[in-house]
Length: 92
Image (cartoon, rainbow, N blue to C red):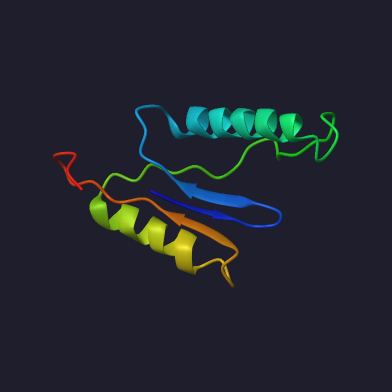
């Protein structure tokens, strides 16, 4: 739904049918594989904190607030991606 990539951390709001901790682990693993494959830094580099902040967002206003925070609450924009939002019926 939204992502904001900073020089030293990432904020992401996603919709998933999995627990937030699993989504975070999977995102870290995927990003690590892509970074390893890029050859930009050593594969042995420790990139991630042991955990991270995860939240359940049950209400539309909670999702809206999280997206707003990710997109507007991080200081000067670096890289920002905004996906179209689907309604309760999966429509754009």
